[in-house]
Amino acid sequence: MRDESCIFCKIIAGEIPSRKIYEDEDFQVMLDVSPATKGHALILPKKHYANLYELPEELAGKAMCLAKRMAERMTLLLGCDGFNIVQNNNEVAGQTVFHFHMHLIPRYTADENGEMIWWKAQKFSDEVLDDLAKKLAQK
Ligand code: 5GP
Ligand code: ZN
Image (cartoon, rainbow, N blue to C red):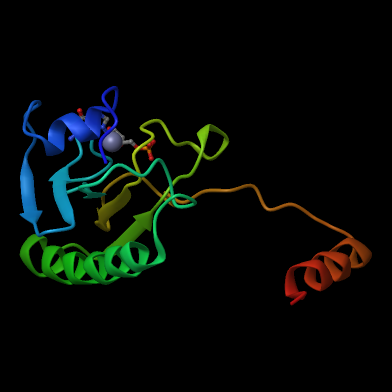
């Protein structure tokens, strides 16, 4: 389950160096080469799945449990003040490497990134919101 053109598959195979901070049978965690803050790391499944849509449910569950454990451990070791978990899917959502990954981003009071998870709040009419809720709640 490897994609020959995927940079993260090459990292997992040891063909490209990385700063690995954790490994188990399913995942590797490494420091991001272009970090948002001190300690910014990435959780990668060892097998290639392009995004959350492709990731099997069992691995998605394990990835979230690992994110919690890593956040606790990194917070203790780094003394950060908070934590963002970020996960992008498809280009429109900011994904640039198409091998599923979760960003672990330690946050510090003075890290100068402000509100890292940003979006522009939009206004929708009650009618649109009612329709959306109905559509999304359907069985
Ligand atoms: P995305 O935008 O797809 O959610 O995040 C991709 C992340 O992978 C970026 O934060 C980027 O800095 C990181 N990245 C890209 N190439 C490499 C690499 O070769 N090594 C490491 N450690 N991180 C990488
Ligand atoms: Zn890959």
